[in-house]
Image (cartoon, rainbow, N blue to C red; front, top):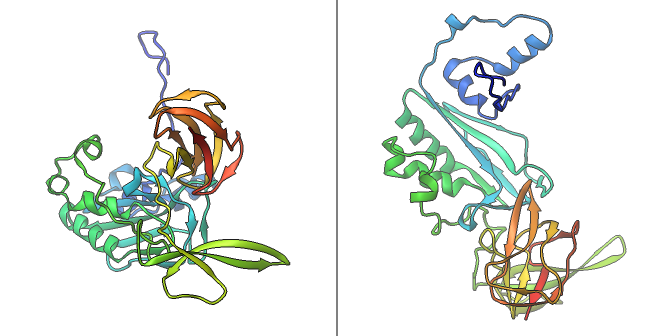
Length: 308
């Protein structure tokens, strides 16, 4: 944009419907998608500016496949069970169903949960009720963090800011919303079992976490599910082993074999769900092995680097 004083400024223009257009629709009773189609068909808008009336209050929560307790790490996976809340003033915009997989290669937005009520506080309470009824089994979501925010006295009193979450909200004690198919970290009632699975004549060794009761033909050893690392950190595999905290693609390798590194140094960049995550050294030492290269796809728990 060229301003009248002769200076140039960058102005971002999103000439499309925004993700939050649902909030506008609920407080105005307009169908913005229908209006967009009308315009594309060469028809005028079905209303004038003077006819727009705002009523009540609406809140939208983006339900993302992210682990709130682990720095919002991307959490791709398969949805084993899904229950969407409903009722007066509750709307769900989403396309995923039970059995669908939220892929590492695309946006991690599972769907949008929107509520309407006559005023802000009743909308807040309605959203809390809807989030409490929302059930998704198979992957982590942002629901625990959203409930924490909505329940906080400062948010209820409308005294929050755009920096409030990082400055005052404590997400460390959140529990996962992943459901029973994703065991909690350190669950001692589960055992890691190596199960042989044959598919189209090919034999695969699959590791699963099951109750301690023995299963014929299955080797088992006491273990807990690998703990995902906090954002910006590699998983601690022990003895200087850096493992992938999530499934993703290596987009940049920042070190080489023989290089000295210090704890906290960035080793590589792992991309998952359109987000770049720096994997850092958890101890000082020398790079002994580098088991990945740029462009390689890795799974959660895969060994990336060994430091000695």
